[in-house]
Image 1: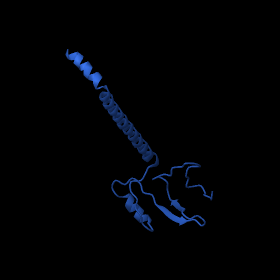
Image 2 (image 1 turned 90 degrees about the vertical axis):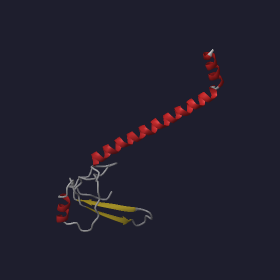
Image 3 (image 1 turned 180 degrees about the vertical axis):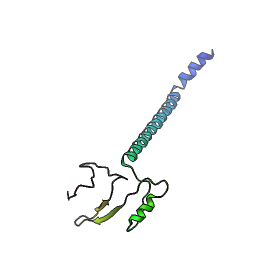
Image 4 (image 1 turned 120 degrees about the horizontal axis):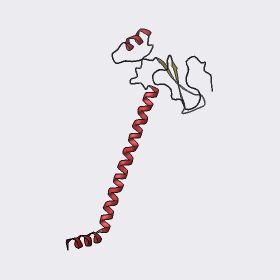
Length: 129
């Protein structure tokens, strides 16, 4: 008797049961999709940081001497220090374009991500493209 009542109630409330089941299914699908997406982004970021040795800290100063550079290298937990000259310039004939020029002594920290062309080499001469 109880079993027949159970089947009758399930049949009577099949619309509500299906709606709740569908909501739970869509919620779990969204959660697992977002979780998988974030795990993939985390792994990609770790790989990028390792391959290009992304810096942990920027120190901005003018006229950094060799003794300043050696003082920074001698700090605890500092593995490497690079010095660079960064110049920003506006281009004639282009309204909203800013050109950032990086002049590097070494390219061991925050290595350049090359989208197209040759990798950076300090012993090569540069030119206008």
